[in-house]
Amino acid sequence: MSQLTHINSTGEAHMVDVSAKAETEREARAEAFIEMTPETLAMIIDGSHHKGDVFATARIAGIQAAKRTWELIPLCHPLLLTKVEVQLEAQAEYNRVRIESCCRLTGKTGIEMEALTAASVAALTIYDMCKAVQKDMVIGPVRLLEKRGGRLGHFKVEE
Image 1 (cartoon, helix red, strand yellow):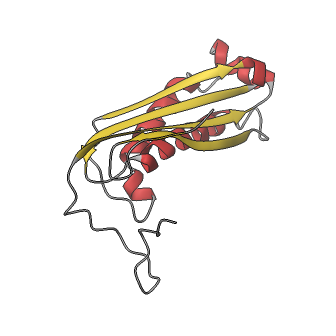
Image 2 (cartoon, helix red, strand yellow; image 1 turned 30 degrees about the horizontal axis):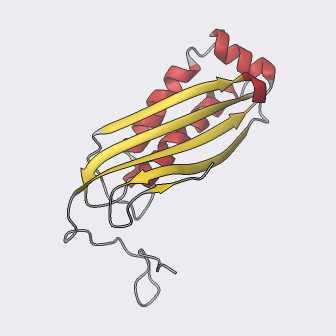
Image 3 (spheres, helix red, strand yellow; image 1 turned 90 degrees about the vertical axis):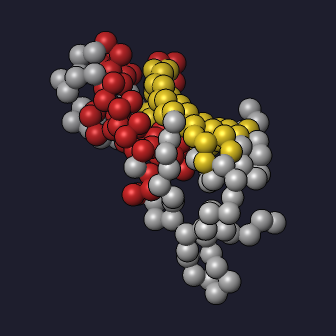
């Protein structure tokens, strides 16, 4: 079993020293869902929400969140992202929105947290924009779909 990399030999949390690691191309994809009533989803789809374009706002929020992950997650390194993409898809048959994020960089440490943060914050933004209409929306699951690069190589969720 792998060791926890952010815990030192005395059990204290610390930021991993990546200075000796080689830079490699890295990419991670994550997804999140937010479930809502058909009426709330219809309002998002047809653009009649009084706060404006929900998807555009959520997309920008997700991109901003990926760029600021290091400020939110205590032991994350600040990263120079080269790509952040957030796609939103209304899934009317399930009364939900699916959010998929993709983050890329050339660097010394993984980018999974940035992808997960982007998808999560996009979902939270949809909740924030729609909470006046519906308070019982459900966010989840949120999960890593795929990661490439780094010492541990390729990981992909099996569907």
